[in-house]
Each structure stands twice: as C-alpha cells, then as structure tokens.
Image (cartoon, rainbow, N blue to C red; front, side):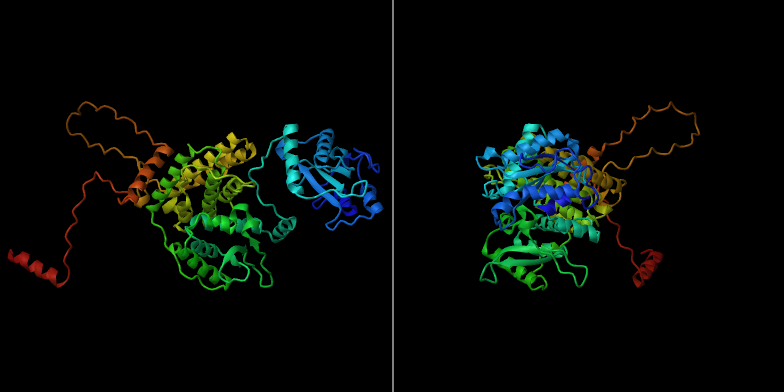
Length: 550
C-alpha cells in the first residue's frame, strides 16, 4: 500500500503527475483531507491508515491485499471537476461492494487525482485495502468483469459515451510498451504478430496453407501438441524473430493475441477431413523442427491481373449481402469484420515497410471481430467470404501496373467498412462506429487517393483506364478555295468522374476474368497478320524469281 500511494503522489514515469490530491475517500480515512495537495510523505501516512485492519487482524492475503484500478475518460470527454470525480468514485465504491451498501463491513479506500495521462485522458485512481473493518476479506472473484460492468453503469448514469460489452480486445502489459519504446519499435510485438496471423488466416483455405503462409511472413511458429501425442495439434504460438544473437524470442499464443485467433476458432473456416488433417500435421511438424515446408501450395503462384476483377466482384457480392443482413446476427458481422481486417493486414504487410494507414484500418476493424461474450449463430444464408482478397493482396504483384485493380478493390472494401460502421451505429456501439467512420474517411481514403494518382490514365498495357485518353480533333487543312460555311461547334468533351472510370475499369476486369483480354475493343475488327518476311538464301531465290518475271 505504501509503495503504490508513494508512486501516485510522485512525479510519474514521464513527469506527467501534476496537482496531486485526493478527491474522495471512505469515512474511515482521516490522514489527509480531500482537495489539498498530496505530498509523498502525506501519501505514506494515508497508506498506513488504510492498512490498519490488515495489520490489526494480521490477515494473510496470498495475492496481496491492495486493490488498484483507474477510471479514465477519453480526451474527447473533456476535463471533469473534482466534485464530479468524487461522485463517480463513490458510485464505483458502492457498486464494487466497498461500502456498507454491500451488507458487510466496509473497506478503506481513496480516490487520487493527478492530472491528465500521457494520452490526455482525465482519470482518477481508486486504491483500497481488501481487508474489511472486521478482518474479513473482500472477494476478488471475477473482479475484472465486475469492474467493467460498474464502468458501463456509470457511463449510462452520468451521460458519458458508452463503450458497450459485445467487443473487446486483449490488453497488454506495461512492460511490453516499455520494451518497444526502448528498442524504437513502430508497434508492439503482439501487434506485429496479430497482423501477420490475421493476414495468413484470411488468405488460407485450409490449415496447412495457413502454416506455410504464417512461416512465410518471417515470424517464428511452433505448434502445441496435445498431452502425450506428437501429431495432435491443439494450439500454436508465434514470436517475432530476434534481431540479436543473445536475444530470446517472446512467444504469444493465438488466444493471447486476440479472442478470435485461437486455433479452434480458425479451424471453423477450414475443411475438416482426414486429408486436410494429415497435410496440416506435416506442416506443423516441419515448423516445430524448423525444417522446410512439407508441400508448397498455391501460395507460391503469382495471381494474374484478371483475378483482381473476380476478387472485386466477390467483395461486391458481400456488400450486397450486408444490406439485408440483420444487425442481430452478430456472429456473421464479426466474421465479415475478421476476414476484412485480415485482408487489410495482408495488404499492409505487402506495401507498408512500417505500419501505416492500412495497418491502422485493420486495427480499427479487428475490434469488431473479437466478441467478448457468447452469441448464438444466426440461421441465415451463409455469407460470401473475402478470403480471395486476402490471398490476392498477400501474393499478387504490387506496383503501378496493378494500382487500378487495387483502387477498385479498396473502394469496395471501404464500402464493407462503412457497412460495419452502420451496423454498430444502429446497435448503439457509437464509439466503435465513430472509429470506423474516421478510418473510412481518413486512412482508407488517403490510400485510395494515392492509388488513383499512380494508376495509369493513358492507354498503356492491359491496365489502361477506359476513358482516360482525350481524343483530339483532326488537323484543319489549308483552304485553296473559298472557305465553306463553318461547321457547327462540336459538343464539349465532359470528363468522366472517378466513379465512372472505376465502373468502366471494373467492367473491363470482369471481361478479363471471363476470358476476354483486358484492353481489347471487341467492336474493332481484328487485323490480319502480315506474312513473315523471308531472309537469307530463300530471300535471294525469291528476288531472282521476281527478276525473271516468275
């Protein structure tokens, strides 16, 4: 208790603690009044007073007798008054059973405020001794869900933005953030791993392909075998490959990365038969022994340009299906969010040397894929899958030659993000809906503008945009006779909009997917190829024949 209170009254890790004072406390804490500056010496006196029941009754608590959590508001909610934070702290203490309202002896608790966090969030720290005044212990069973339930009720009572309980991400330890900052990493290792696992899963049609693709992203992979077996895989772990020889890898299980990345949940999208199981077992065994992949598959083949049209058409069908999908079918919406986030993750891995807009978009969307509570699967028509987009974005050629196809595909994926945002808006998940709306209008819009800028606009190769070239009028001949009456002024050429250009290009790509070469005008007659020109001795003989008149 003394160590925690001393830290809260100190300068903080980045000197972010300012104007440190207590805003509320239980009636049994008299050592320091509320609203008065709290020094570290004062904090130690408060800690000793809070520890009285623990010391008097000599209670042993195996996991420690100190409860600590912070109640934080987003920076958008603004700065609250001390009076409001005192109300919130008292309400929280009642809901968590710290006070007499629980029907038991009360706990000793205080609420410490010390300015904004490094992210600009107004917050207050709740500190309590879990030993009650009569020597009994407060139960910490299921305490984190209870804390979240209390926070949701406080949001509703005081009119703050409600975060909802349907979706939730895994947290991370503060030590991970400190290590990443010390090494100058652009993101946490668990973020890197989650993006690569999502990308590999979204691009794979079976488990064996998932293992091969995952190893191909450069991460370390190892299976977790069932107890007493060497061929039954029940889970997996991944780690970022160390850059220094003496550095040891830090392993993360799929479930530790995200709720929807456990192997059983990933297997729900893959075929379940003996052949697939044997192929997957061979790839897992090769990964465990750090050997080459067992049997390379379709991940080694570079997709053709015409596949952009087919994949884009698949995403179009998904968006059409989402228009009629009930917002109550949370499982289907989570599946769409998961696979679309995986496709964006694959795109980020291929095109972003450091995490950029595509990584941000994948991160914003993946939260909707992680369902924190059990939800029944809706009895509706099965959803189309964007797995083809994940495959294409993970292994297709990337550059100006495919920029038009990327722009078309991204436009449809933006529509998917917009549909998920609309579902969240109607479901009351306003915070997540706003995050996805900003993603659509910010990160994805910037990427789409870049692709449209680098895509070829003049007829050049198979990716020439329809309507990109402007026809010029024929040159006027010099008149040698009196000039005739001037012709009527031709109608001005109205340039096509970006949407019209994309529609034309999509039609061209669909034609290519159906077997017609993109960029070929079917209405234009096909030229008859000229006969080959003879060379060498044969040419000399033909020349002599022509001289003889033959």
